[in-house]
Amino acid sequence: MLESQDKIIAAVDKLDKREIKNEIERKRYLIIDFANAIHCRKYDREAYSHVLKTYNEYEQILKDNNMENGEADMAIAFIRKKYAEYMETGFPEY
Image (cartoon, rainbow, N blue to C red; front, side, top):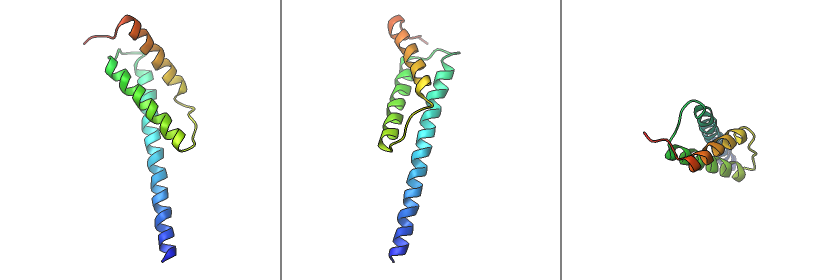
């Protein structure tokens, strides 16, 4: 009985780790993709707000799981720079 419970706990733990990894990857991809996209296209304030919120969630997931961010740092720095420029000059209107 205890052995089967241990197997269930191990399986749930494995699934949980996989879900966390997938969530991190989805958020990282969105952040990096947005940074690449703003080189070629202008986005409104809502798009920037969404990606900045996603980055905060990404950082929290990493913190909660004792992980480090390495890949999205440069992307978010560029996004924040463009966001600051639009805050001064105004966001594009569609």
